[in-house]
Image 1 (cartoon, helix red, strand yellow):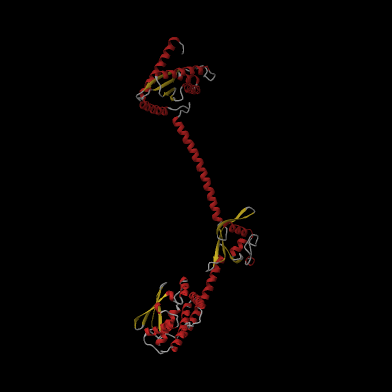
Image 2: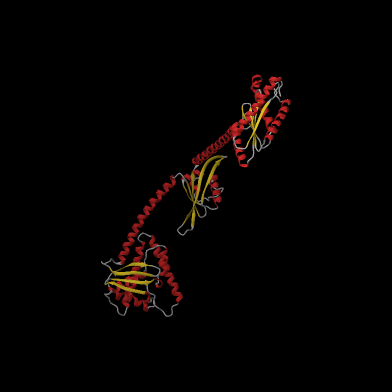
Length: 513
């Protein structure tokens, strides 16, 4: 464990040897850490080597002999290392905790085995420091008493450990080492048996699982394939193992689909849904998953391919999607029909079905709004009431169909007689109403004259009802104060007065004007 000082030694050689020692030490401890009982065996080996070196140095020391005091024994250990040029006393601090216990603090950056410690820390290995074990065994050799040591703290700046006398006579290291090796061998045999049973269980699971499983090596050759996969790919297990998993191989069309799925993913990693068809007919739907197999060092060793048969789920999903689409289409159609019906109802609610003119409800709302505007801007509003003379006689003599034709003709006559800003509506029965925004009495009279002129034209047209010339009574009024009822009443009264005057003239001279 001690490197003798030689004035002719090469620092580069010493540094290289120190690196080799650290790497070897880290490798041995790391391997032992992964084996059952291995770290104990490594510690005992290092303790045996340390004790052998300590016995030799203590025997060769000028002041050889047992030292009852632990501090004196450790001081001899330090002085020998200082004399050999291996230890700087400034990096060590020893404190006597009790007669049988020492606490040693050692600066980490000055430790010979610091590089090995860094490697072991990264692997989260237990501390098996040769420096601690060598100091422990040197004190044991110098005092002639068995010693043990424990780590108190290990860090990047300072490592602290304690050396103290054992409470009982420990077995000889070589005997303990033999016992550890025997226990380790027995544990290894038990672990091997358990591993064999576990492998059998895993193989049974893989062979009975519903999924198709294929394992590829680094060269994309099949190293394992379960029975389910052999059935899916229609290939014998003997032909499948060691065959390359590629297009045109023994794995047939399904294997080609898997390769295409892997190519679409860009690498053998991820998942994709593939459809296996025979003569254009869907045979199976698989969820194909590719999972890389890597070692402890992260190097990719192969690929795990798992094919899950999702045919039933996929067909059910597609059926549900088709039903959903059909239902959505039906809902859209019904919604359009409902919207069209609502629009029609809206029109019917505001329109006279026979003439196509606004109905009375709509006309009253238009009058209300216009009279409010008249009050705001201080202008007059005109309103005309129109009634078909002797309309009952038309229905009684010619029938209701002829009466409907007369009402449609009146609607046409009135619509031709008004301005674009005016509104003509069917008030009810054979009565019509006309709203003239911003109209005076003279403008109302002008509309009445146009109605008379268009009436004469209509009576002379071929579309007139035979044997029943149209005759209309018209009354009008204007309003500024917003009194809708008063406006309607005055216009209706004038219309009634004209009708009565017409009837009186007809009785007097038998003529119709």
